[in-house]
Amino acid sequence: MKVSLIAFLVAAASTNAFSVQHSLGSSVVRGGAASSSKSVTFMSTTDAEKTDEKEADKEDLKKAPKDAPPSHLGWNSHQAVDKVPDTLVKEGDGPDGNYPMRAKFEKMCREAQISITKAIEEIDGKAKFQEDAWVRPTGGGGMSRVMSGGEVFEKAGVNLSVVYGTMPQEALQAATERGVDRAAGMAPGERVPFFACGLSSVMHPKNPFAPTMHFNYRYFETDGGVWWFGGGTDITPSYINEEDMKHFHGTYKKICDKHDPDYYKEFKAWADRYFVIKHRNETRGFGGIFFDDQNDRDPNTIFEFSKECLNSVIDAYGPIVKNHKDDPFTQKQKEWQLMRRGRYVEFNLVYDRGTVFGLKTGGRIESILMSLPETARWEYDAEPEPGTPEAEFLDVCRNPRDWA
Image 1 (tube, one colour):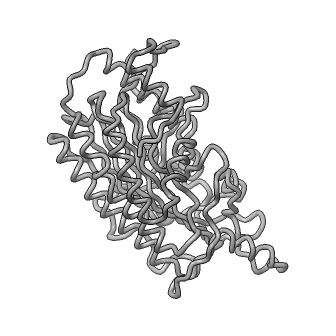
Image 2 (cartoon, helix red, strand yellow):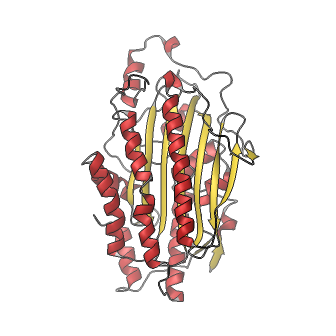
Image 3 (tube, rainbow, N blue to C red):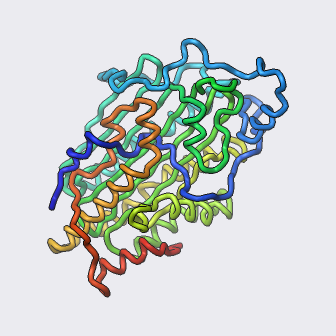
């Protein structure tokens, strides 16, 4: 049964443009060191917690300003514009002078959105990205670039989003399983004003031998002074090609090793834990790297790591699509691809924490749902025959491999 995913849009949402994503299990928390920057005062999670413990006088803790945005911005609060402003970041904005990082991260995302969509258009050779831009009265906004009906890609999207909002402290605490106090610095019970900027993307090629790819890189701050980076790039094929996986994972291992010898092992394992469809006991795809709550070193150092990862998306993914976009395939192989697309939908609609963030903050629905493919398939009690390529693929989803 081939199903249009439009029917799903009424009931649920997929990954947000700057998904708040976390591991399914416990892991080492990389957070704690205060920034050494002299021009910008950043407070790490651990520093914020120590500050709270020392603050006997609660008057020193911050309260949400009267003009802070509501916790739910409203589904229709965005206003379409013909041209997005030069920046969506409020000038000079941010706690303790953090404005330079906010502006720098947005600039990085904008430049990457342009370069990545240009490269994908060149690979497709036919379709062009449609751009929608919007702003919000409370500040921020975004740009969505979406391609459909291409020669190579059924659907591809790259979304930029800048959000000014507030969330209840309990909602922020529920968003992490790693013991990070994101409400640090705020008075008890106060809504937590936050800033978020991110770029996210999903690419769904037509050919069953060309994998789906997803990435998301983001930066968050709260008015309590807590800041962190998150992100990652992962790949979701329908068939095993070891050379493709060695290239994809090897690209990101090389970047990780350059910045920290522990990064790849930790972030690859984090991706394998996070992208699990628990009710199926299998992963969505073959992983990649995934990280969140990163604030254990100078913010500019983490920024440079995020920037290199984001700017390497095409290097990691482009050659794989080029190599397989014209591969011959059977109807059975196409149906298997569509069933794996169904698994992709299940993960995004049931487990992706970006959905919760987008819904709780009143995100732009079309952008939240951008990651869903146009078509997918579900068959009753479908299990591939033993010894087939499909069965081997499913075994990898149940027992993740090391590729690099």
